[in-house]
Length: 325
Ligand code: ACO
Image (cartoon, rainbow, N blue to C red; front, side):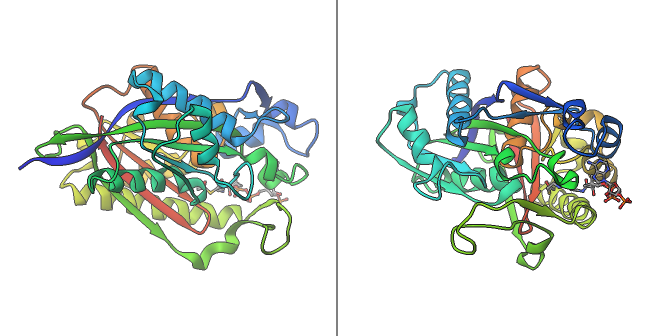
């Protein structure tokens, strides 16, 4: 039987030029390099320039993904962009990317699941492709979290950075086995009871202001390890696979200790985990495609590899995607 799958045929990323190291940050807020590295693994983050918006980061990452796929923007008929830091309340940042790519066909819209956003966006695109509504999608995670950080709050401002990652996902026909290229399955969850553990204290409808990120770090940490290991197991079981079958785990890059804790709980060797959080901190929806692109660019992730992407974010939201590259 022939089935339609969504194949990841190109990856791209973009990090703003300005790098903010832990040492520099310690000049303006009561923290130090040792504390940040030992608690989070983060060494530096990138900060968008004045006037540089989420759509600018997204467009740069998408262009790189198109080049990697050796495709023209004309071939895209769907843009799904995950962000919690859109350029404006509306129109969607995805439409700004569409205009930047110079295309007027197809659909472009944003999804909002904070740090899980890319996995949610990938699931949306995968379902559009599987039902035949789209043939080729740009799936983007892009954020400028520096704009919603309280730079006087050391509990949060040291943890995040700006960036974007994108993949081009294309319809392919196959036999539907786990050996075939493409997305095997996606798994999404939300539990709105935990909104107050990680949120922004502003918004157009509540305060008519942008607001700042607020977080109960210890609680988020506890939920993250539990939910992420559960959704990884769920995704593997759904495909009759085990952790041994995985070539790479590509986790949301929130914190090295969350990555280590999740891998330990799953009995997964740390050598199979792509880690980039040290280089760009937590970039929310951008973090999974940034890590994926890094793994592809440096040659670790190869054609035919089985990868599992997972993420968790405010809401809470969490999810996973198993794909054969
Ligand atoms: N520099 C120095 N000291 C600090 C800093 C800082 N940047 N931030 C907090 N501290 C202090 C606290 O004030 C506290 O001091 P006190 O004991 O005098 O009150 C002390 O360090 C210990 O704080 P804890 O909260 O116990 O530190 P913990 O070991 O829990 O680490 C952290 C904090 C890193 C935030 C951790 O809880 C964590 O990683 N949580 C997950 C948060 C996360 O990754 N969120 C991202 C969004 S969700 C997601 O992406 C999954």
